[in-house]
Length: 321
Image (tube, rainbow, N blue to C red; front, side, top):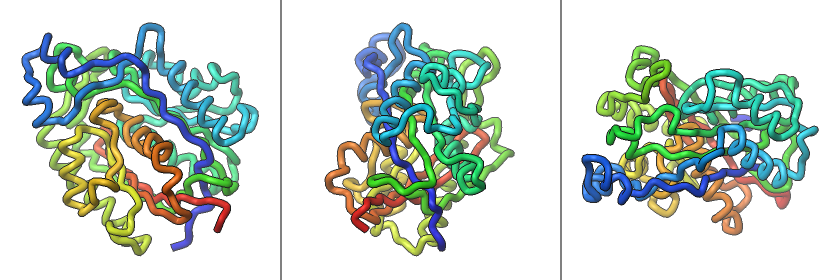
């Protein structure tokens, strides 16, 4: 299969300093340390502090991504945003982030919940492939206090806050990621499995959703590996939607991905929804970049309300090749 000439040249994840620990949850909810460890494997969740918003957190990630790419705001043609838990219904998070950056690029959001950043990457790929843009800033972020009931153990135990941004471009960078292939699928009959009603709280049919997610991630992963002629053992890393650590471990085991090649941050960041998979990817790239080799394949798969699944096969690239 021919590879796309689309690259990530700069990226960043911002995790706020606020924390919601398991001690905090045990003190005020009907839960225990044993349940939290056994069922979800999350120790703490990062939380936006007073005054932090989707725009301010998104701008921090975007500024760092632009700096890594060696670009300024005037180099960006398009900003794509994504969020599940926003501060406002309108306008688009992308427009507010653009204003915070001082960037006048065309801006809009995609609405795909936890897969939002990946869907934004897919849209950016289309804009770049058709010549409608040269460089796109793809952002995602979550402010969970706007949609998660703090007194509901079934949701408050999971969600954290974060923001991510990446510069996606046609020109090959000196160091970055190449987008090799994408797969996507949806089951619209499952649209009611994960819902945030207008002016209401997040709710999910956990059992029904988990069964669909496990099957969808396995199918998307297998399809990407088959289409690119790879096996799970060839992967430098696997990154999945950061729902909870126990689910991630189960999925990785099913795919026969060794623990050291399974990149995740949910245990200390919480489920950061649309920022989850990309933040786990970007955090690990910063940690592992000295050990990466040109051509190393990375599989990223995430799911969102809809229900939808989207996967990407990325390759680490350097100018050495």
